[in-house]
Image (cartoon, rainbow, N blue to C red):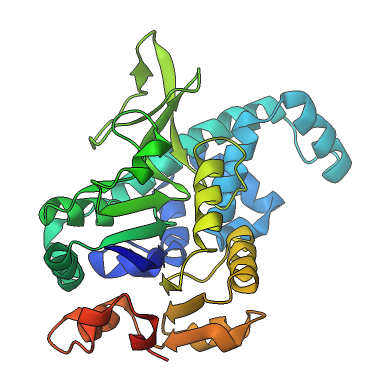
Length: 328
């Protein structure tokens, strides 16, 4: 059966598996930098102090700098900072190295150990038992869902076999449809635009594809990325909101304003849609929406929520797909 419920998961979903949240990363990352990368980070921090408290902003800044034409940077720098930049070309080269270092750091931090996924076992067991088909929209780069599906032999797709193929989401043989809206640390794109998935960890050197094309990581946050597959994934999310009866948001605070706008739009256009916010801060989050009357709150973490739904303390788990059986 195809569920009328979908998940939207953020960092709080993976936190019990040992995946750090952004506020932990922002404290740890600068400590491991050395030499040129440390100097570039300090220079960027002087110009934009907010990166010291906002890891996503640092990611976006490095991404923008490494791809920006030097002439554009010169014009912006002269207008905004006067003589502050001395060697802009070196800054951009440094930003490229910092961007690479940052993504390697994230790959290391986001690795998952199977024995830390036990809190998700009740959910996986329920999916295995019922055969329910579910859509999971994820803002996480980690492989928590992928490894869980492998552990329980749940068929899943993230739109890749090797290459990107969005038609896979329509294939009924896949039980778990995983839409990774901000990408994954095992997704790569070649210089010519070829998008592939490489589910192997531990790469240290630059990847090359076929005709020696350089491969770059496909992780974005919180950019309104116009390139594929991100634009198509966002379109799928937006369209799914128009047919859902319930969107369960777990461990996500809607820092991406575009996603918040899509959800608000879904609530306005789809009168059957309700949100369930699973977070210790869900009441505060609810108050920030324009249609709070169709938002339910569970003021706890994902572990507690799953135990109540499907674990030893389960309540009404067999009626998961029925919206009137959710918390209200």
